[in-house]
Image (cartoon, rainbow, N blue to C red; front, side, top):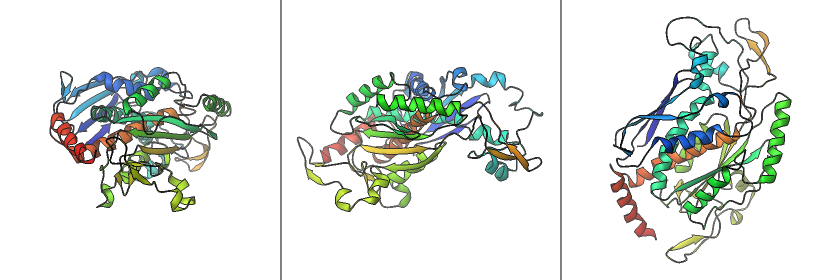
Length: 390
């Protein structure tokens, strides 16, 4: 089983992530991870924190001379902002100013009740989306494994607020590597990781309006996985269904409130004849093909050989420059919610985190199906399997 755990607070010394279950011999460098961390930090609408941090990972275990050892891979991401928070976030006994006004839409109040804290900072530091940098590091490692077996992920923004993009990125019928490289080059020239230039300009204008009003905006991101073979996941138990595992991982990303695969909610309003994907005779070396991909590459909790298509909806960030009504937990009397520096819109960053979540689940499912103790064994198992369905 491929798994990871993270530790660390938003303004603490740094973030730690341990990835366990990787086969030996996987090529892996710090730059593989740093590229993804940099993608997470970019995007129009980000706050002052991203001007401070320059996220770089240090691999502190599990890799030697550029290849994994089969042991857990340990990674550290230092918080540069720690220098400004040494006293507030010290691990030694002491006191610091308390935060007593929980924010609506954040974990603040629920966390206070659950863990018995009397200081909102004890909740917000760990509940902060800063922790997703560690998840992106874990997902970056998984993406390296997927690339080794020919799977590539495209992730982009399809909506911000009420502005929706028209997306024409390739979803099938194109070499995964070519499609991935083309999008990555285009992505560098965008401000919101949106492939529709017209919509992106409207999104930027909407973010500017929200900033001027002291408000925030959410949106929708889409992730497409190309080159995924049929047979990942299983229908034999509820917790082995891959669509459930993907949805669970994505819903666990901060701010995500809805996930759909394929046509998702749209399928509920259509008859079956316009929802299910006809199976046709194959072309070339393929034994079969699909007339469409409304299922988003998953049927019965199992990949069917088509691109895996997933969308996630992110709510607006809970920290508002014009705070919503709340209470002070010392008096339980009305007060404006706590405010800290924050983003106006973090949808592009959330898209990178969602991409990482999908990468990790797909890599786990791939190793579940073709796993071995070394990459040589994994690729050998996969090659033998492919001979059976091509």
